Length: 259
Image (cartoon, rainbow, N blue to C red; front, side, top):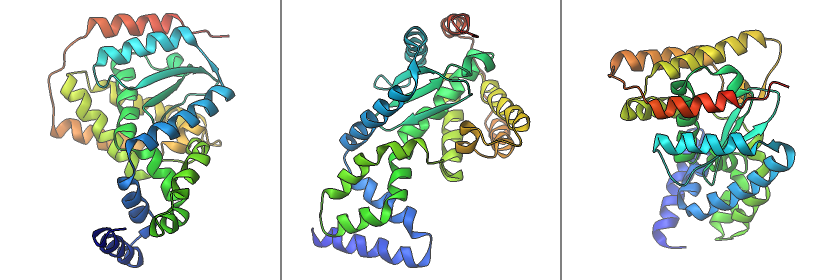
């Protein structure tokens, strides 16, 4: 390990004693890891998800057509899986999973665009591997100090934990703001993001005595709605209508199986 890395690590270690050091140290370590690790983690999580849920091949194909039309990223793959709850999540390795219940609830292509933009922001900021690193931070720190690649192996071995670890308020806020910025850049109606949070509020009220997985990993819908509405007021923009996105969205809705 070089002197520079040693000094840097000592600096981060000092921060640990004066602030919430676990996120700081684990983020520092994640920043040293190549993106290949994200892909390896993502493949492991994908296997876990597809072993647990049935894949809807037809809706998956259409959902990927929709995402491709957004022209956000050509490496990200969207999967639609069959489940009885409203849920969506992103994993390392550029994977987005949508539960087919989503299409029973969202009503427009800007709303689906907002949901995908939000999940893509989690990928862009490596939130999945950062959450896992926070959880395993002490083991990772020990491995990093001793220049031991077992730390990376531990990440991969515990990749399935990504499915149970909720995002922090910081991560959700970051993803929300970046989703708004992406919609603005693409000139897609920001009402889709507002409607998405209103839907989440409605689900939250309906399930006030439960903790659905979507809401447990995406907390404080009302507060997040307020933040986005403030962002819209501060940075209003003119939006276009995208007939191709509308057409693909209608095909997705048409293919919903309500059984």
